[in-house]
Image 1 (tube, rainbow, N blue to C red):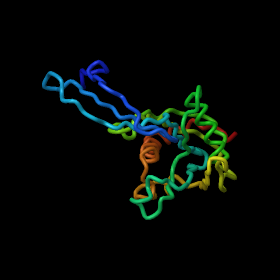
Image 2 (image 1 turned 90 degrees about the vertical axis):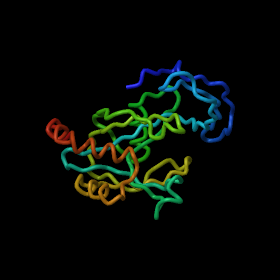
Image 3 (image 1 turned 45 degrees about the horizontal axis):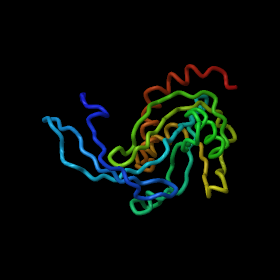
Image 4 (image 1 turned 135 degrees about the vertical axis):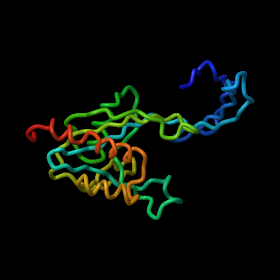
Length: 205
């Protein structure tokens, strides 16, 4: 474990690089070295964006998951299809809690009511160049009648909702059809803790 903290990084300059839907800052900095002393000045671009909430909707009564599918611009050049199978997810708005984001996005993206939220973890998906942190949850849901196309038209969203059995989702993971970090982490967590969720579910609401 490192003994370094925020005081061991000196930001010499922070300049605007780009301002749009997201933000890019240009930092000139230096930091302390493991061998002692300070390292050279470094110029680094930092992708600045709001934190995100990702939710794995899980129906413990059916042992099934609700996943969403939409086009992702980041996958355009590196995937046969840029439409990705994912968790329900969204960014924080001002003064929202992570739980509020989870409930809002579940309704907007999948028409879902989340029954019980269980925190999985928080992580940085790409700390080498972005300050985004992801708040990851599993939520129990009633998947009966769930499906169709959802999303906010004013945001250009076109989101297809599907219900998969847990075995189908794991097969998609093993075949590489589910290949985004939040979904991979959440599915692996579900394999470790899903039995507890099924035992605690009780009668279907």
